[in-house]
Length: 125
Image 1 (tube, rainbow, N blue to C red):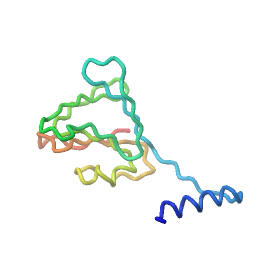
Image 2 (tube, one colour):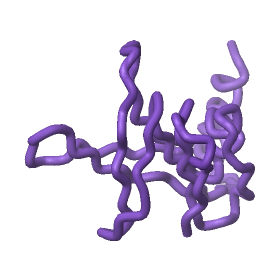
Image 3 (cartoon, rainbow, N blue to C red):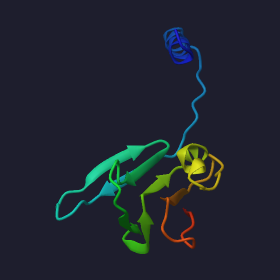
């Protein structure tokens, strides 16, 4: 039995026995991806990050980003990563992104293997 299973059993037992549990809220990222000429977006939710990438292709991609209807940049490279504060210490960190305190209400956007040296991670509220 691994740690996850042990911890899950403890949580279930605590609930069954009426013991109080400590719950920690974390921010999630919501992403709507429009691909090509499709009318309906594909919707994703994630605790750590959402990655839009080339997969196994050797082609570069260009991602036009907007937040709440306002355009703020075009990211070009192997991919783009949108990360929550929780995810800032995971894949985002290894891609050169900033470490963000998990209590902050923000997200970070980074290019994966960007083609421009001036293309740096962006932290948005």
